[in-house]
Length: 86
Image (cartoon, rainbow, N blue to C red; front, side, top):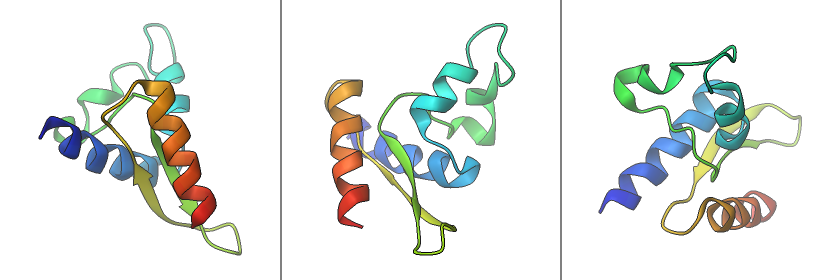
């Protein structure tokens, strides 16, 4: 059940900030520009790999995909496959 909520929130995060959750994670560490961002949006912001923004043909972000349930690396691979299929 927890993975479902995390997946949804990874997709939300990727769309809300138009960036991958993995990249956001790198910039949210102590001393970095987005430190503490995971506390925003009522705790919905995920800073684990596996969330990607989805872009339309013109490059505009039109949604997000979030994957959870495996390791961060596995989640990222599945999210990239979903993005490629999109």
